[in-house]
Image 1 (cartoon, helix red, strand yellow):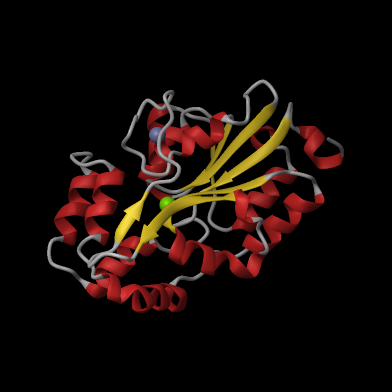
Image 2 (tube, helix red, strand yellow):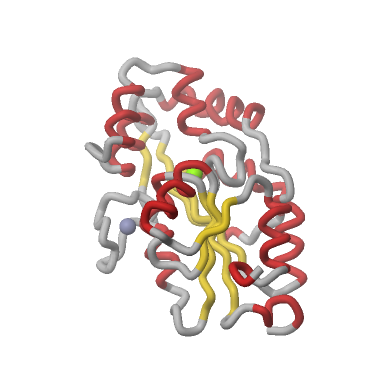
Length: 230
Ligand SMILES: [Mg+2]
Ligand SMILES: [Zn+2]
């Protein structure tokens, strides 16, 4: 560590949500609103009310869509999802300061990877769910399911805390960037949260160390200042 990152007590590492964080909106909700398969809104309400896990709900929503719609769904997301300002700059900042950057997404590979393609993030730094279009309906696969230490065991789908735990807290200053329900478990175990939307409310409620942000330029500014010590 040198220069700016020396302002942190340990090596910083960033874990960044995708839907509603890197992209301006939640792509899964946008797809469901656009294609409107019968029953999707009840599933979303169940996820929000925690009556259904994220894993179960996301699996059920995509199962409402036929596999033949793969290209249509992907193209819709590619044309409608906007990238939050400052994202490329944040990646450049991380590179310049040797700060590892991981995408920890509850989204699905067939739209996460194409949307991130222009940014040159190594594939092994992108964690998201998988997809199978070989059956009649879209089936979501879960290559990064919860580990044995996850309090939310079996309910995450893509388990952000399992990824975070690979970076020991005594060696790393763990920073999560996110906006919503899939970020709540991770927010409880990191050193600092950059939060938007529902995640800001949750961090306030639980008194977790957090800095609200709107663009990634804000995030860079806070990182330059050494996070919470600004
Ligand atoms: Mg999100
Ligand atoms: Zn989990």
